[in-house]
Length: 470
Image (cartoon, rainbow, N blue to C red; front, top):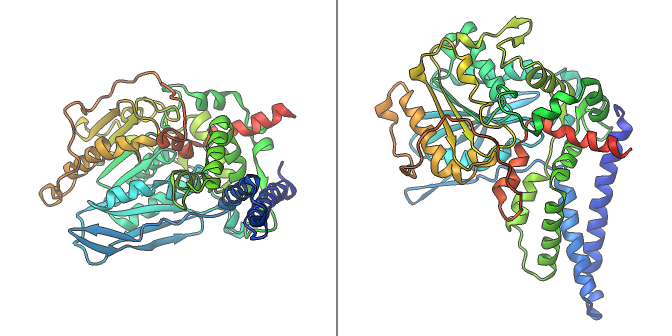
């Protein structure tokens, strides 16, 4: 499939559907149609409106949408500043001029797994009240010229190293999902190369440090597909429409097809209900459906080398799990981490990075004293809930803030009330339990949204299904 024609064909299909939606909306909205009242015209207009919006979102990067921050009865403007700019990703800072600078400095490492960093919008907002927040903002590979070179797991790791050096040692890193193992490698790299630049703490949330620690559909598929099959079925070249023309990528729209296919009936029902709501005048610009799908449908291409090296080195060869990861031919020893406090957060019902996969990081930290290790298993939480849902807001966020305070240079100066307070039942647990996969419904936005932060190999189901159909 490594041809521009196949990439351009997908874009042609997307563009055609967007045009059909716009045409149907225009016809159904024409004043002339109102002369002969007919319910079918309202349904045509509604179908067109939903279809046009859905297909247009697939090639748009969502806005962060964080314009103001309220505190003590005052509204402060939020300025999103670029601290470090690189070809494949930037380091952003959510500056809030006019308010007292927070003692906690947090680097939030966003996943590069098909969706933009804006997937962590709610996480950012929840941390802004108590922290100075920095976020890794990865770029869409289709927009990066081939002259910028390659970008694989080693380059990703070195980007994180540069970002941590820029922020300095008073930083607390929070990594979510896919970047967890590479964040661990980046800190280990700094531990040996530049110890003074290490962050004070790492919070690793639901990531595949050892994919074999607790099997899921993701790990099962990763063991069965060969790299040759994966490259032939999933990799394409960017077409002539974008700046990255000719670059080999794993297309975001191919990945979106795999996301949709996992819960096809649920998504179909969600769109049918939305069309009916638009036709009856019950829908709105920022209703629950639009809020979720505006983000869910916005996908980005990943470089082929990053996608394939993640599958090969993280999932198949388990280089992080076996402490055999290398960067530019240099071994990265996770045991060299001796001063950075590490906290593991997992969800009991996480069917993407199952309990135990992230917890494996603690066994690799042989040089770190037990007093600097912590873990938490959130009861009943799925993948999305542990970093952006109710479980995050009510239980996990306060625990993370307490962990940051306990490992800050001046604990007394940074100690601020963590709200809401923990209930007595919200104690930390480290027991690994079997994965429970809950039914996914659009009415329950957290389980459905968990699929938007999938680790990379999950997206290979679409090529597999397509091959079966052929």
